[in-house]
Length: 295
Image 1 (cartoon, rainbow, N blue to C red):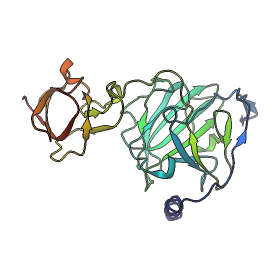
Image 2: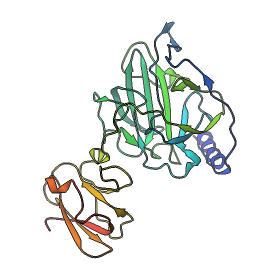
Image 3: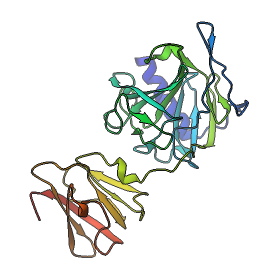
C-alpha cells in the first residue's frame, strides 16, 4: 500500500510538472479485428472509444499500471465530477466497491470483452445498475477519488475473458480507442480527443440523481451543473439559465426554494411538471436555495 501511495504522489507531481509526451500510439485497423488471446481463444474487439463525451480532450498514462490507463481532462484542469460514459454499447455486469478501486463499474460488451471503471465519485449504482443495457451516450458515473485514489481521475481497463460475466485485473489487455492502441510501460499521451460520438447525447437532466436538485446552464438541460441533496446557504451555482430536476417524488421535503442575487425567488416542487423546466425569467444568478415542506 505504501508503495502504491508513493506512486500516486509521484504521478500527481508529474502531472503538475507537465511532462512531455513519453510515447506515441501505435496504429491499428479501424475494423479492430480481435487481437487479445485468453486461454487460446481470440475474439473480435469492439471499436472502443474514450469513455467521455464526444470532442472532449484527455491526458492518458500507464504509469505503474500498464496496460491499465489513468485518465484526466486535458492538462488536468479539473477532472472531478466530469461525466463517464461506456466505451461501447453493452450491459452492466457489476457495480461494487473495493478498498483499492473504490466505486467501480464493469460492463460486458459481448464476445468476451469487458471494460472496468474505477474510483467513481458516486455510489456505483447511482446512474446504472447491474443488468442495465448501456449505449455510448449513457452516463454511468462521474470521475472521483474513491478507494485508494488520492487525486481525481478515472482508472480504466479493457479486459478479455471468453466465458463468464465478471472479470478481474488478471484479464486486462492493452487498451485501444478508435482503432489506436495506448499501451506500454510508463507512457503518457496528451490531448487525446474522444470520438465517443455514436448516437445522440441525452439531456443532462436525465442523469440527475433522485433526491438531488440540479441546475443546468443550457436550454436543453445540458451544460454546467450544480447539484445538491441538501441546503446551500451560499451556493456557488452561478448563472443558471434553465432546467431544474431532482429525481423522483419523496415524502416530506419535496420543495426547493431558490433565491436569486438579482432579487426574488422561485419555488420548485419535486416530482411535478414544474419541477423540471425553466426557472422563471431565466438567466438569473442563484444565491442560495433550501429544501422545505412547502413554499
